[in-house]
Image 1 (cartoon, rainbow, N blue to C red):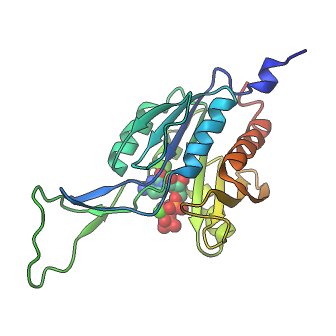
Image 2: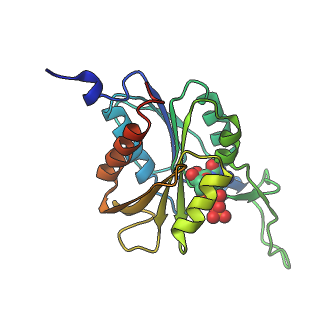
Length: 226
Ligand code: CTP
Ligand code: CA
């Protein structure tokens, strides 16, 4: 007999995913950003939808096609991403923060294009809000999943973020691995949980990995999700 809940374990569940970089404006023609392609977050959104979820993808500026069956909310800056994700948070079952949020933004946004001037060689920056940490303080029933991109001590830094941001899971990738990181179609990650479990995944396509990661989380959270 065809078991719907097994095939579509996220049916009736809202899953919110953030993806891509954010852009922090300097002036009308320039911004501060990073190399995130959005591929991992888009793969997570597609996988969530395929598992039956009402998937909501909050996307920074990326050059990717909109995944089928997913509601997409486009944002630009960290501040806009925070607002969008807060508006989707209350009734979400799972929130996955794959976005590479810019950590800093220009303190002042110039309304006109800045002109070169002798001696003007610095832009003052300030920290953006840590979206995930904010969600960690708001969490009631939501399963909160972060990502961490590291270039060294990936698992140590990752478990530090898991704890300090009050997450349920963090997906850590060492972006120096030739099969991992920005722009690649493959990734190599370790899934850490708040219970201290530690699951390394071998190199595989981001699409395949997204499904495996979600299935692993669904299995571990079957009580919470029912
Ligand atoms: N994150 C966020 N808001 C920020 C910065 C990060 O929501 N302003 C989230 C990312 O979406 C990711 C997680 O926090 O899920 C970890 O991001 P990462 O850049 O690895 O960690 P940071 O806490 O920013 O620490 P650092 O960059 O200093 O390593
Ligand atoms: Ca960061």
